[in-house]
Image (cartoon, rainbow, N blue to C red; front, side):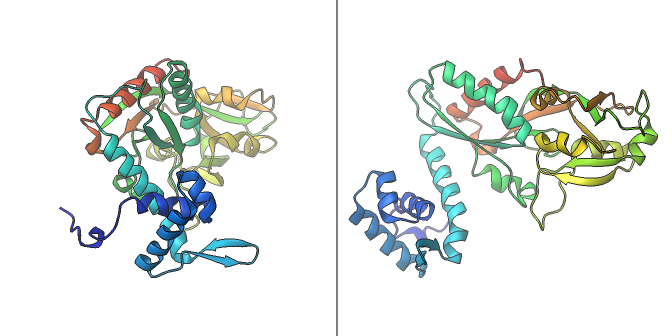
Length: 312
């Protein structure tokens, strides 16, 4: 059990005040957002300043700015507010037609654009009142998965990145290679020698300047097959890949279902990978604390139902 000492003299309503104040950097805008009077929110700001021994919001030129401490507190406050909301809305009985609970999911851009978008459309069509917030794993978070899972309802990610966590499999995706249609270094079929010699466009899920490359699963498997990819360009979005392949001698590997997201790219040639790669298996991963949560059970059941019918 956590020592309640630091919280004993604090009203937990201050959590929502802190989040709103740091987000809007304005007492009046925070008050409008919270549906409270300006004096009430101004009083909360003074109390927060005394607690943190910091001004939090200061005037610097024409607009207010966050102090260095406040800038650090903002993501923590948002995450804590979300965790508190999930804590007090968790119940074994859940009705999506009446619940206004917000579910927070993070994942790669492609999974959010495909599975996430289809799930949101299904929720809207069903008349459910739940809200959905999608995000992306931030810099350095790939190595702190349990910490991330305490602040969100789940991560959309393939097998191979996480282990020993509760999950439900959603769908599988085949791999294909992309080259420019005028790439003279590639014949009618790709060879293992092509994979080793061509410069690669790699996609990383963690693009922080000081963070290690979170290597794409497909390239990891190529290394296991004895092929060392020559990574020439790294991007943080699969949707950016075509622009770094077209007109060059570079090669990339993507999920087959992603081709529809690229639209009609006449200069791209889609080729079979000469190395047998197991299909990528996407899953929803969550913290063990959600095991018996009725709302979370609904979330994973609906996600699986939607994902099973997607051409990914």
